[in-house]
Length: 115
Length: 110
Image (cartoon, rainbow over all chains, first blue to last red; front, side):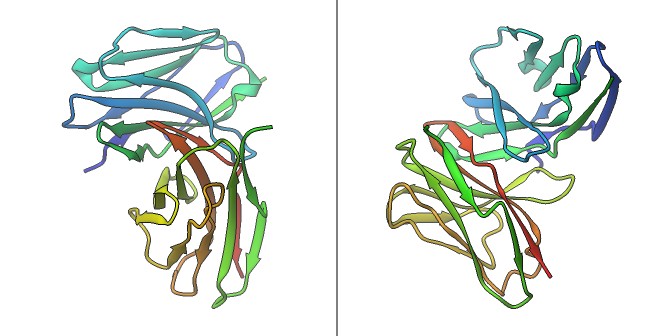
């Protein structure tokens, strides 16, 4: 069964718009970690955030914010006032306690921010 | 600078040839990983190693081989048995539940 689902394949916005990238996950573990990575055109994955399953507080980092809701198994990522430099593919990932070697990646959402 | 290096950035191979992708890290991480990424898809785990001289198969290990003779190095060999090797390959190293990624190698089979 798919562990991480990113239903939005591609999103296009105009600069300064807000945009939310959706991530839904599936796990039977009570302890797990969720991640977001950014992959710019260069290809390297850039770590954005890690959140453990016991911490449901929303987090804000500059223009980025994350909404973790265990009740809906979602870990959504919002970019406020998007910029052209935000254009990239964004991946959500899950790792389960006791199995930290395995990351389950979603298929990614390609974000296009137009000037 | 601490980090993960992969070489080469682009690699071309003739069908039927083996090719080895390099991955080096100076982060002193015990764990290292190899992932494959195909267009429009997420990353799939090929092999991982938690310690020197030990490694395990991931989800798509067929047609690939690895070695872990040094903590810093985890080379991946794409063998002729891999039927569809053209892809983007990412190496990562990690500690605990975090993973850090290299810049990737794009392999094209001609």
